[in-house]
Length: 395
Ligand code: TRP
Image (cartoon, rainbow, N blue to C red; front, side, top):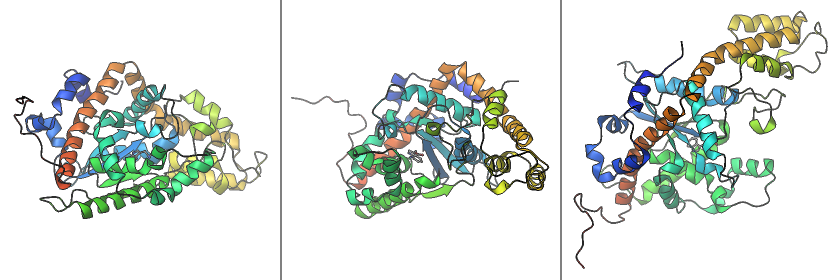
């Protein structure tokens, strides 16, 4: 039976068009918003926010490194049976511009990525899903934050240095240097307390904390003392999955991935070329699981009993790589089968997928505009227009 997010389907029938959504999030209307939107801003619950740049279809590394834990945190209940966290997930499409000015595929990549999120079990009823580019407050807060950090601090960012080296970049744009500043705006706009990220993103969360501190010091909140809480990073256990070629990271640009959209046959085929222990040349040579790519996948996708049997049989030279790979491919396909089924469901309902985004963006805009009002108030940047002001002035 195909997997269906029933609540999403019911709700999507009444979703507003993007134009209407612009109307709904005007700050002065916030108090009359539907309960559904209001609950997103519920106080007290810890908020988790994470995001990805839209790079199209996702691979197994995204699943083990991020999606799996996002879904777990989204569905986690506390002892009272209510959700332990508010969760929001952001599509960082502006961030794509830091490394490529070609925007022709950003939207199709966004939709492909969104389908993978949904297929992995992200429930848009629980977690608003939205594009950075559609919530103008990201750009606004980015501008203000860019005054709170020095360019030399940003030049020291190790993730940036790595990227410049890997991509052989000769020069750097102002926007690329500001990558972590935009990310800080992404996180603090929603006042996230916890940010699940891969290890390479830790420097960015650190910069976010510094910016939050600097803002709070300069601009105390008129009532609460502080506008921003300092968010904590959360690293996932399998944050990096080795590529099929044995390289340290599964990555689309290296062509060493298993995609979440790959079927069983495709996975078997790709697995055949996976690198194993290069010293194990024949079936009966003893192998070293600790250096084997396929064994590292088994440690994630196979049962503990299978894993210990595989380890000892490989070491003893009684298990060949061909059989070991077949089992590994089967176990991965087994885990991905429900995702594939959900992917098929969404792929044939693109209007629903697009509505999920618009819906998430309505919710995101509401939170973002509230934060910006507090930011402006703390910065004493003037007063808001009176609620019933309609723009009639006498000349
Ligand atoms: N920089 C992140 C990455 O490349 C993506 C991202 C953008 C992000 N904004 C974010 C992650 C906010 C967490 C929170 O993986």
